[in-house]
Length: 299
Image (cartoon, rainbow, N blue to C red; front, side, top):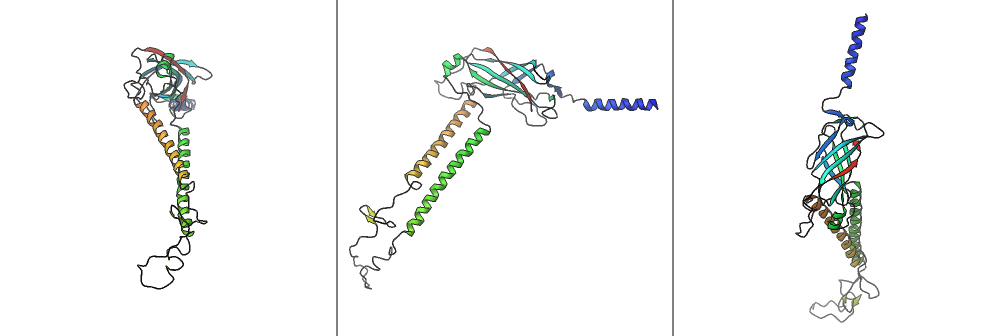
């Protein structure tokens, strides 16, 4: 009896140990001593999607240069063993420096799992201009990542405004046409006073008697008005509509130009940051080691 109880307890312990044991491709985040991240490469993934190992998320030098390789070292934890702090270093031209460098790893079973998938860690960093960089590139605004919800909201607002303007223009044209037809004189198209001369002569070559058509002005005949005044286009059917449509088109063109410049900056960041002109500044060939600091998160 005692032997069977002992065996049962032993088997239960083995099962519990097996249940708690993590696969070989998982590791405690706090046990990672260092990371080496490279541009253009993706992380490993198990539950979600792979992310870039290195991704610039902001800074006033974003788009001017891309970090090629970054080395991050575990700098210990603060209030939690798994809330690891990181010191990251990269070799950069003297015009640039690292800002924050935050490490994100994929929790093995969930975002709360202290074990993370090996090879799943990536760094989101900010790239800033040094004083030398500001002398070369000028003072630039902090280019935070604009591909998120705020950008989507701006696009929705713009297209809603554009649809409203277009709808009002169409309605204005339709309303003017319908009301214009309804305002035509009752005898329009039937001659003047029911006929040219009030007789049933078959001589259709006779010239009509002189008269002043309803609504005629010095510049031509304008039917469908009262008081002899010519019809003038309203805001939505004339110059007002043109101005509104022009403003919307200008806004859209400016938005596209800004997006194109941003995309060009990112695609050419290995050169100087987007401009293809020969007079554009080019980063120095010399390098120094820049250091950034950041925290960690599990996704």
